[in-house]
Each structure stands twice: as C-alpha cells, then as structure tokens.
Length: 281
Length: 287
Image (cartoon, rainbow over all chains, first blue to last red; front, side):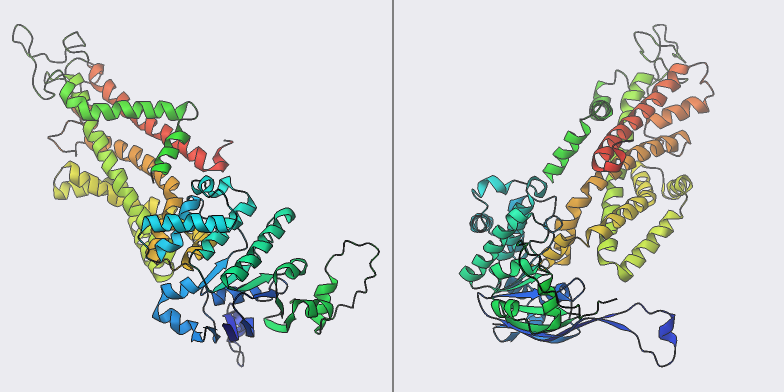
C-alpha cells in the first residue's frame, strides 16, 4: 500500500570559490539517490544504515518535512505529493512519525493530555469531549495506564520510555496508514528498548499500519521488522526478509554491518570479513 | 497560561528579594487604586492655617504629615495621588512593549528569510532612536498627555524585547516538537502561538518586569524635566516642582518622599524580575 519510487534528495552544497571556476557546476550533496521500496499494511520494513547514509532524510521526505528533488510516494495508489497539495491536513492524517529524541519531541510546556490531543485540534476537531475520549483510549493502547494519572503530567515528570510512549500515542491518535519510526529506541535504556519495540510491532499488526523502522542498530531489527532494506551512501544496496538478509547477506556492506553486531557468546567463532567499503570521508 | 502565571509567583516567592519586591509592588498597586480616595486633601488645593494665612513650605505636622509645598499644597496627598500615573504609564508601556516585541520576535524568528531581514532592519532603525529625546519630541509635537507618553515610550522600548525573543525562537523552531506539530497538520499560526509562544513566556515575563521598571523611571524623568502632562500630579512632577522652586534645601520633606518612592518602586520591580530571571536561567543561579 505504501509504494516509494526513485526517491531522490540533493542538497546544494555551499558554493565556495571553486564553483566559480569554468567547467564546474554547483556541487550537490546526494543525500538520497533513487530509493524505491514498498510496504504492505501491517508490515514493518527496517531501513538500516550508518550515520549519514540518508535513512533519516528518507523518513523526513516521506512525512513531508522535506521536499524531494524527484521521485514519488503512493499511498493506496494515490500520489502523496498531489494529495498533499490538494489537502494538506488529510495527507498528514495518513502519515505520521516517531522521532529519535523523546526529550526534544515533546513540548516541555504542555501536559500529556495537550500533547496527545493536539494533533486532533490541529486537524480541526473542536469537540473537546471527543478529544478527551480519544486521548484516554490511545494512552491505554500504548500502555500508559491508568491514563488519568498521566494526563496532567509534563514531559519532565516522565521517564524516557514513558515519553516515547506519549510520542507513539500522539502519532497513532490520527489513525495513520503509514508510520515512520526514526530510531525510536536509540536513546532509551536497554531495559525498556524491547518493550517499545514490541509495542510498535503490535500496533503495526493490530492497526494495519505500514511502518518504516529506521535504525542503525541491527540487534533490534529482528524483533520488529519483517523485511530489511540496507542503505549505504544514499542508495538501497540490499533488501529482503530479515532472516535471509541476516543469514546470507549478499552485499559486501551488509556483511560488514552484520559482522559488527556484538556477540554475547565469547566462544562463538567469528569470521570478520575484510572491510570492503570505504567511508564517506 | 494560568499555570505559567502560577509558576511565576511560585518561582519569585523563593529567596528574600522576590517576596519583598512583590509586597512593595502590591502596596504601590493598592495606592494607585485607592490613593485619590484616601488622600486627606485635594493635591492641588492651597491650604491655609487657622489664621487664614497660606501654609507655605510648612514642615511635617499632624495636619500635614509630609508638610506642604511652596504653594501650600499637601505633599502626602500629592504622593498618594502620584502613584497612579507612575504605575499606569509603567504598566501600559510594559504591556505594549511586550505585545509588540514578542509578536515581532516570534514572526521574524519563525519565518526567517526576507520577513526576518525586514523586521530586524526595522528593529535596527528603532534602535537608532535616542531614548529620552525621542519621547520629549513626540510629547512636544503631539501634546502632553499620558496616552502619548505611553505610545512614545512603547515605540522606543519594544526593540530590545523583539531581539531577545527572536533569538529564542531561532533555537526553538529547530526542536523536534515543532516538526512533530507540523506533521500533524498544524498551521504556521498554530505552531507560533500554541507551540513556540508558551516557551518564550518566561522571557516575556522578565522583559515585562524590566520594561515596567524602565517605564516608571522614564515617566518620572519626563515629569522631572517638566515635559509631563501638566494636569497630572506624578512623583516625577513633584520632584520637578520642588526643583523648579529652588526650595529643595529648605523643604527636604517635599523632595525626599517622591524620590524614595520612585527608587523603592523601581527596585521592587527589579527584585521581582531578577528573582524570576534566576529561576528560568540556570546560568545565573550560581551568581
């Protein structure tokens, strides 16, 4: 249902003196270079890559925080750029995002009830009783129970895991079809990481949300993702079901990534392949 | 919004200076409201003694607690009545300053680009206006009244608030919670006034305090320089009358009370402002 085709984002590099030399055009940074993938309803696609590989930019392009240089995204066959131009609010109801930093993603001045209810307000819902009811329902759904005890709290009174649950509640209250989770657990304690990961997977399944799970951490992808797409320097170098990619990586960069996963078993025989890839330098 | 006001009082109530300032401010506010009602005499009426002789520069007595002026007017009554213009001009100017400064800062900082350049060059132009001469010239050209004084003072005071708020907005607008609001379909106006504005309220409150103090001093200065509304008795104009009559040494009771009142009121406002600033700015907490 989510169909991304040839998504490309180039940033104009700062024009230095060199760009004035004859024969030199304006240089560009190719953050995302022809990325294509599809995600079905209730499916979780893991987008894995190192810092600077363009995975976060891909996420921001898809939710409309940045404008792609070229390429398209279709939701149920409808082109989202056209849909967004026609009705911005309707587009944002379908596509939501969970941010990496649950501290910065919540307005410190708002209470949990405000934070979770605001999306409905911004969508033009004026019925306060209906908003209050939805807020309580989604809080319960993300595991913040009893919901009443959280409503009046400010973000600084919550733990990192609770904050990320509030972010998830805010993202699902509009009942989106597509959810981008940008490294949602990378700033959380290991002990709560898995709870959040399992919650995301359950929500995708129960609500039939297509989810793009962006991460650099291959250790958690097995628990949440159905398929993996490995991204390197703006391109997707390998895709496939999680088990297949992890067991038999085809691309040399993927092999390097998998070899870098730390193992808890000191006796495990590890064959480290030579590093075949060159960094961004 | 009410939580922010409540937080304000809770923050200021800590430490010795905040409460002191708040109490003094409260007394001055009560004087501004009740002053004319509790003043024992008409502040501009001439007073005569039992023999029918004008009470010129009478020293403090049971009839006239703070003595009388050269024209036989009761200083205590003038003091009680003079609190109102100080707080009225100060309060309205502070309000105007913050409304204009905060909105210009929000809009410039949020939209950036050409809008920001235009508004900031405008701010620079206003920063070029000399403070007191500008107010005096406006008062001379348009007639001396409290309203013109408030407008003139607001025009030269919003500029610094606008700059401070803009700087704050520039960092706030890059926060993930702004992106989060944007992807839920929030309009620019909703983001500015519902997401960003609550976060600059503390800074706005500090600038209210300092604008208030500065406006009270300026109102007194204008009165002292003789450019105030001639029909209004204010603390500044009392000092002016004493100075102009050259009787300050012979009648210290005439000039000391308004001088002290201005000083105490302004320091009270600063106490409150500083107490609050220390709470919202962790870097000042150790100092």
